[in-house]
Image (cartoon, rainbow, N blue to C red; front, side):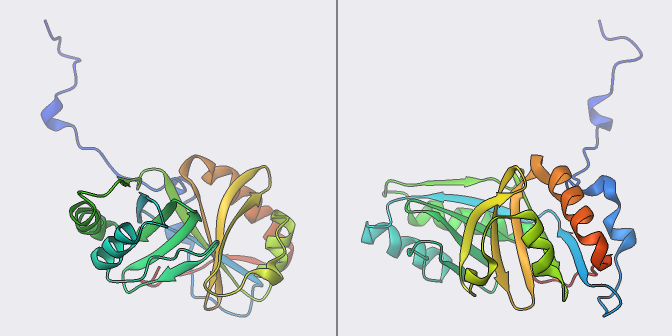
Length: 212
């Protein structure tokens, strides 16, 4: 028999929070200016779709291109920017699709329909990743403190999987900022490491726009 202390399931109201929610970044953000050398913020609660398939299979590639209305990046470390997000090449048979969270269901559905008769895998992994945007005149110096990767080799349209301290992450550069994509469970470690490395240059929480 249920007692009076049992939670009423009908009153249960789950709340979705980003992994960096405890840092209160939203209340600290401000418009980027020249007063600080490094600016960063989490782009919270994006959609992340994991796509697996054979990039040598023309049927697979064509089906993905049709479903997403963009060419699937098949060259090593390449990526594509789209109107709704980006597609990151992770390995010869794996990609990570990022989008606004309310678009993930439609994108996943389009992929599953197009790939129904083709050996492949499409998985909503939105609970597993997050993204941090890093920008400012000293952003590259800060990243050099955090990763062994030579940032001079990071060209537009390129994504690399490398190390951040003791952990792994994916890194790409777009317009005037770096995008750090990593496992949700790594968020506390990476943010504290980034914050500590950026402190000597002046560190601020960047006000975000609606872009990815």
